[in-house]
Structure formats: C-alpha cells, structure tokens
Image 1 (cartoon, rainbow, N blue to C red):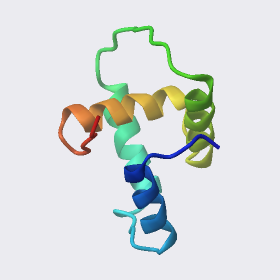
Image 2 (cartoon, one colour):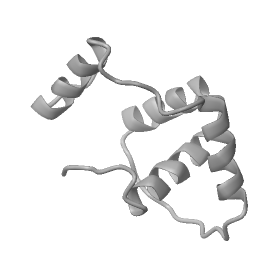
Image 3 (spheres, rainbow, N blue to C red):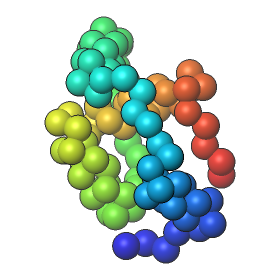
Image 4 (cartoon, rainbow, N blue to C red):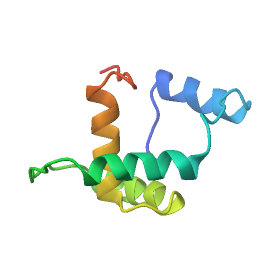
Length: 88
C-alpha cells in the first residue's frame, strides 16, 4: 500500500469510524452517470498515470460494476462541475 499523507490518513480514519454516508442509491447514481456519459460527444486523450493508481481505479470500477474508463470520465465530470474538490 502506498504511503498516505496527513490529509489522506484523516480521510481513511474518518471512513473507518463510519463518518461517511452514501448519497442515494449507488445503482441509480451509476445509471444516471452512464446515461449522461453516453449522450456526450467524446474526445480521446492520452494520459500517463502510475501503475498503482490504474490498478486501484480498475479495482474501484470493478467493485461498482462499471468500466474503469467510465469511472475516470465520471470523476473528471464531477471535478469540472464542482461536485468534488481536490487539494493539490
């Protein structure tokens, strides 16, 4: 497992304490996002990410029964529409 920074450790501890709640039905949300993604014009891009990050993305996608590319698209969409924030 990769080393976590303080922010990531705080999140992990919070999740382990049960402080996180799901926003609605995962299956409904997945269908909603997939429907949105299917109706958008697509542009192919190429990015380089670490093997470990790709492995973890694929694992999360498998857990949610969606292709990992769709997971990446959904994360990008949520970020650009200010639904998630990232501290860099």
